[in-house]
Every structure is written in structure tokens, then in C-alpha cells.
Image (cartoon, rainbow, N blue to C red):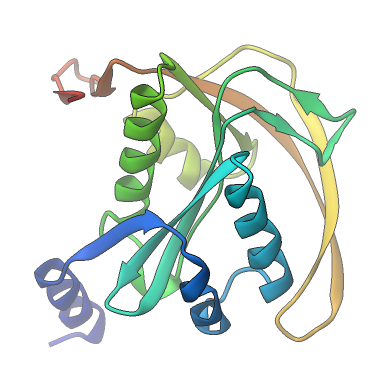
Length: 196
């Protein structure tokens, strides 16, 4: 049997647990292929003061995905910095071996439910104009382009090799109405689930 198919079957049989990161779990991010320990500690600190929720998808003791739920939206890497009043999801990432099996959707489900439970009826996100895969996922989930002009975002990061790298991309801002999680498919079929 093809290794990818075997992994998919195994993953479908297991439970992915999604919850806010706890301080005692930070050390497990040494095995996570996205971001540095410094970045994870900084984000955890922002969670501790109530600015965001650092949601992590766990398979047993292994972090396999993440998303940030920022209570006050905005993009400090934008030029000029973008300030928005809606809660936003950002830094959605799933480890390569765990992609295309629903982990990203599960992370977004939890973020959307938390946002609605906190009294918000919309949630936003930024997506690179060139990231068609992410855009397809967001469209499936009911996100729509807000119609604002694209903006340039840029910054730098430290690669796992320790090398500092610069990046830049054009981003667009998308919004989803909450109250019902899900959306209609392109052919009009319902894909909605009421939020508890």
C-alpha cells in the first residue's frame, strides 16, 4: 500500500486534539517545522495577556498544526500596518505529513466557534494573492474577499537552519459571517452546521 495512503488511513483512525497551548507544552515545539522557539514563546505570552489564542492541533504529544486567533485584527507586517476591528485567524500551518486530511479545517472550526462564543458575528483573515490552495479552503468555508485593495506585507524570519530570511507578499483581506459555521458549495448545496 502506498505510504501516503497508509498514513491517511492511520490519521483517520486517530484523534486530533485541538486546544490552546499550555506553558508545559512549549518544549514540544522543538519538533514543529514552523517558527522558532522564540516565536512560539512570544505568541504564548500574547495568549497569556488575552490578546490571542494560540490553538494547536495535537496528535498524541506531537504538535501537527497551529492557528492564531487574534482578538483584535490587523497586520503589523503590512505597509502601512493594517488595523481592523474584527477578530482574525493568522499563521495557519499544518505539518506536511498531516495535510489534506482535515486538520486545517478542524483548527478553523475551533477558532470560528470560539469567536462566535465570544459574541462576534464575523471573523477575518489575510491571504496571499498567490496562495490559491489556501483561497480554495477559505472559499469552501464561507470566507469572501472584503473588496479592499491588496496590500504589501513583508518581514523577516529565522529559518530552522538559523539563517535570517526576508519575505514579502501581496495580501487580500477576507471575512466570514458567523452564526452558522460552513457555507454553500458552488453548486448551491448546503454545508451548514448551527453553532451551539
